[in-house]
Length: 93
Image (tube, rainbow, N blue to C red):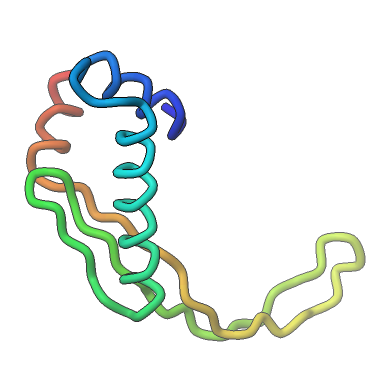
């Protein structure tokens, strides 16, 4: 599901709200999650899951074209851990 599909679904379920309002809310929620992760904070949404940033150590990689060894610098990567309700929903599928 894309962000625009999510917005359309919310619009269909909430005819009393305008599409513009819903788009603003969805963009604001995603922006706040992104900002919190950028600050190194953990974002937890009960019943859905949690987002956090993990540190990856530097390592020695390999250039796939030449086979030459390359040093890969350390980096931060986003990580999502699904909540209990999502796990249960997936088990039912």
